[in-house]
Length: 312
Image 1: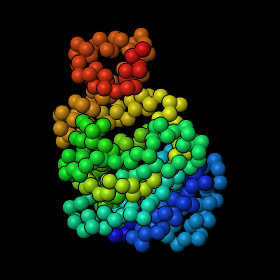
Image 2: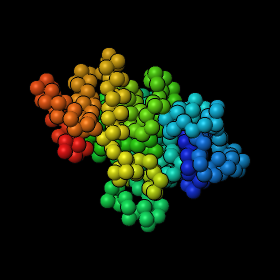
Image 3: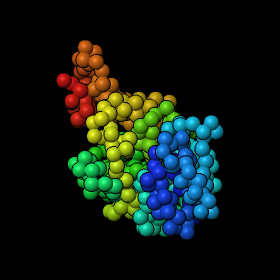
């Protein structure tokens, strides 16, 4: 395996050295691609020093040297990658020594197009642990049991809570297989572009279960995490997720081979989030409409805490 590790870098001067060196511990890592996204801190200089120190580290910026967000930054990393295998690592996260143990065996099978595993949680300070332990605890982000590749997409769409989930840090994919997708990360999604990508990816590729009973990477939790701000309530999660499900709904409607039941479920999830964020005077009109024309959209929403909060 020749693995290209893609790392978007933004405001991560405190963490990027640990991330890079955690990837370089593996002989299979052919290159670590740092895409610096116009950080307001000293991350660019640190990335330049890492590239000078390690032959396998490469650094790029966007052509205009501007800030384009995580989606566009990962896309640029995919464009620059030359390895036959792709892995991702956020600049404030890091790999554990067992990161590619399952992949070494599974990728011997040419039918395996991707492998997913579990990630753990690392709190960078006592303050971040005090603030966010109730949200994350010491739990693994993982798929709860082994699944056949054909069951990964419907499991994530229909049974997300019972199925579990995996993150980019624990995903490894064949670069050649990505040709099945017409677009990679949606650049206009400032949040949840990774979730949207993973859901579509699991539809097109045969993703196999790797190490899911213990962490292969660690998610770094600190006060400046964007997703931490969403989950802590500083940003309305329903507002960001309505954009996610709207994008998935557009994709499902235009992808003829998506099963009809999946299309219907995605549309209903989109509608339930739209209701949750609608102005109060409009909200009850939408509820009345869907109670008559599409009651399952309301039923889908009632299982969603953000929908229930948004009713009042």
